[in-house]
Image 1 (tube, rainbow, N blue to C red):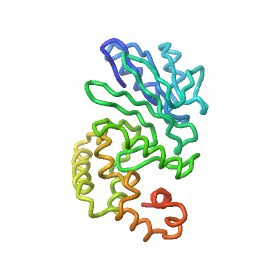
Image 2: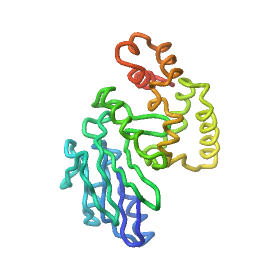
Image 3: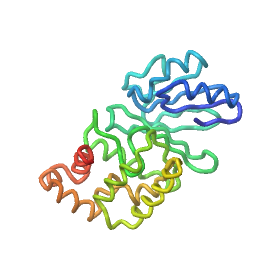
Image 4: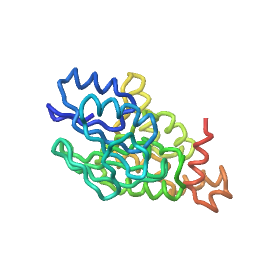
Length: 241
């Protein structure tokens, strides 16, 4: 949720109740609902919130979002709370997945990326291809270093366990894992992350790194040769425990 003291914006409300409670507690009017993709854990609260508040809903034009909603594609802009959000097409997790980027929220960029980019990981390929997801992640990785990465799941520790399997000699990754373990030990979130940090520690943004490629080859040399290290990493992560 973002707020300006009177109005609020929420992203991917899978459940309406926590949002309604926050609005009441803080005396806010819900103005806007942003949706990145169609999965129920991102849209389950949309109808209830729209009906209760009259908020405008914005989502990807190619996906089945609870309507009515404003249909968006890459290059569009959404204005809310005096902020301008650029829409980015980031297919891979789903076919029509989008992200919302604002260049200046409290003096730093902000990214709402849904299930495309996680801290230390990326979303499963339910509808898209490895090539699509890699292109989407590359577009996010090109954003400014200080962009805050607001993904929608606290998967960081499990992602970092896999990342350390892939790139164990990455000192930044080892340090970040220690930091995140401490945060979770205190019941605190690891998020938001940043683009600079993810470029340093996330194997899915580092699939051209020599150590990452070598690990992919050890796991499945045939797939790596045919489809690239990124495809191997994603398939490996699907079965990693």
